[in-house]
Amino acid sequence: MSNYTPPPAIPDFIKDVPGLLRWETTSREEAVVQASAFTKDTFTYDEVYGRFCTIEEYIDAPPEVVFDYLNDMRNLNEYTYSTRDFAPVEGKPGLFVGKDTLPDDNTKIYMRFEPNREALTIDMHCAWDQGDELWMIYLYRIVDAQRVLKKPGSVVLWTNCRHPYYDKNPYPETVPNPERPWVGDFWNLFYAGHAIEMQNLKKILEFHYGHGANQAGADS
Image (cartoon, rainbow, N blue to C red; front, side, top):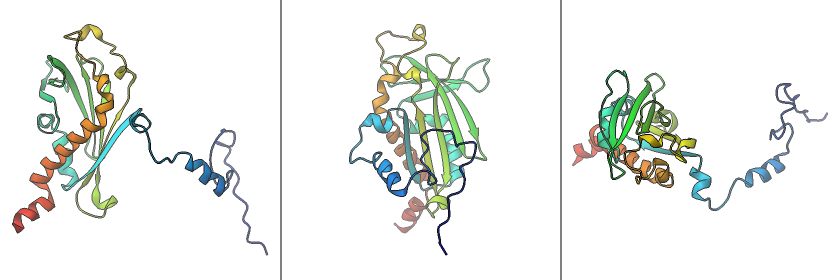
């Protein structure tokens, strides 16, 4: 008797979709060839971070602690490089305004948080100069490290999508100084800048709440 098992029928919902790479339609050898085309020894910055900029880090602190710290807007003063002094905007509940010291002028940055404690996610919606369209969105997800790394602590994922407004300011009339650079001019530094801020976050939380830091202090 033959041990051959014919592949299952392709579901009707996808049978007419062109270009799908699935076991039922593509041999293992051909799939490896196509997968290899995505694998190179080196990648350009734009290939990796041109459309999306994601950073990730392990933090030796409980997920709920990380969530609470990130969800307190006052703490932007501590772990970010340049955003400071947020205060509520009168008449607009949930909207805050602060300053971004990255440019050499009085740049306002507006911010609104959309947290989900159950999912351990925080979406930080912000924009320079105006608060009507918060198009710069920083997506945070906190994962229990016990699930993914089998040790206490948190894995923090932070993603920024390259919104088209990064390439051109849609509100030039709100700019305080026409000579000021636009936030999108710094896109090629987003990974480095956010990685630095992530390290600030890690150092702060591990200093105060980290199991390893506390143990080191107890042993010294």
